[in-house]
Length: 174
Ligand code: GNR
Ligand code: NI
Image (tube, rainbow, N blue to C red):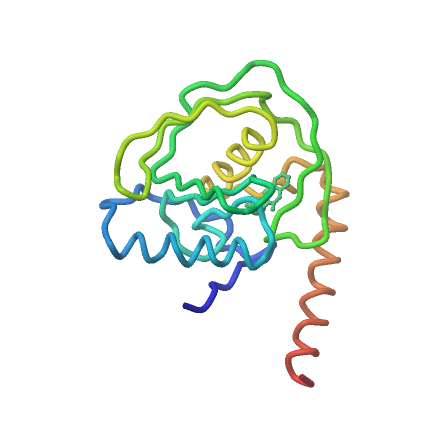
């Protein structure tokens, strides 16, 4: 199965709001597998369906060192977020090469379905809590750079446009 293409900021499709998944069936599990493959190939710790132009509430995550603990969240809802926040460095597969600080809750509790459609509740802290919040933002059409100043965002857009031009040239020439 080929990996999926990850949309790049500032693609307007990254700002679409995802709709709930209607059924956890074989077709969805196929999408889940392709998203996991895409995430591992891109060496990310998480991927939201929005990033592969599928506007459904679906997230895959793996924050393990060995890259062998996939976590699948279907129709995730944050049921609790700690009032304590922390500024941490973030990156995003849709904004390659850009890293900057974002404030996030230290801990979150999330309710979601797993790949079998069973309800699961996850209590997360550390990098998993950060990743879940980052991915939940994607489902709402929000990319982490939108937390940064307009000045920084402008610079990032310029960088992304340059990267895009370089990629197009590379694709033409081989
Ligand atoms: O791979 C990723 N690393 C990361 C690091 C710090 C905070 C969030 C992330 S998520 C990111 C993958 C991604 O873009 N998911 O949407
Ligand atoms: Ni991201």
